[in-house]
Image (cartoon, rainbow, N blue to C red):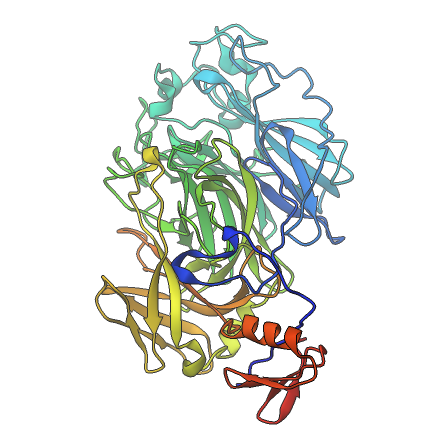
Length: 573
């Protein structure tokens, strides 16, 4: 394949040290660019079907974009929550509006916003608001589900006595007194905190997945005609998946008549910000493990199922186990990415990435949208978007660089071999995203150099010799063996973010185990050869009347950006 370059002697740049990547990759011949960043915690993405994407986040932060790259803040236009008074006494709604999810409901012909109204001592609720336009105004419709009813806490609007009567518990399960299993002190040991909704249609049914640390992640069905709970759908009481008669509270409850079906977590293991999206064959359940602070160890884990209501592989717990950080006792869930140091043209490392949502566009390409913090910026956080791909075995991999425009599609991966072995051969920067990083000390994964050869070998200092190979003829699915570990993923073309026109050959692959850990590995090398570019530009600058030959390329000295290879002229499009 002949490479196409555009050299221009009019563009002679001066770069700071930030132009140089780690591992000696030279970006000095590229133009740098920046993006309009926004601060939206817990970003939930929705498309307005008119060319604009919106993200709604905690504390009523909202932003919009037309390209998933540059964002503009805007208002959410939530007017009020009626006479809502469920939070425990001393709490207010302001400052406790968390992690909304917005969805278009074609049955109601309305935009629906599901908002967490958080309260201490598990006195939280998820409520529904509706609007004719995505940018509001949103009008309160009513509550969807409550937590913390147990007669132990005074509420903003009600006394602790028979507080459950101010919920829809009686309407939902038909009781006239508080069932024994809810009449407990330590609510969180058994039942969910009703926050972090994710609402989605599937086969005409409307589902809400919700919950967090404490009793776990649950799911109920909503009524598409109202946006509120569907009281015609009932749930059995089950312990460890087996139907039984309700009695005292049991932490192994996996289905409850009021809270619905448990999908993940339990026993106070970390896990929040549930988001479910169908991509291809599977439903993927995204959770954020750890604490959201810069030293909290936040990270995205992914589980999958063939059904929206599970089971999701190894997502449920039957006892407490520390499930994140350097002392974790389990590595459950695929780790899309994690805390990382300098990568590509960016020297400021990312960490505490999480509470994501997922978008699938009209072409079937998927994107993960999350917030990230940084190694050296305290609690400052911004929104990030990365493209998602499905490997040949149905596991997700994320693009190594933030999304700045679509260079590779899922269809490309499944229909063509994007690069020859000769094109792939070269020196790469590699980053493995391991479990058990020391988040309290902001430990990050670091890049290192490896070499891939045209005959399928992987070599690097300090690692055992490995292999790379295409797994399917005419497709871009790959297998990598790196330091005696097997990874399966894709090879793609992607632009190095913060650079203009800097395509790279990239690998993204994952170990395929939800039980023992699904670490991700990324590799990249610049597709453009930067060797000799500055020499060409300097030579052209000194003598514009000659044709030069540098590194096998003859370049016209007429400033028209023409490259001559093998007697043919090329201009980079």
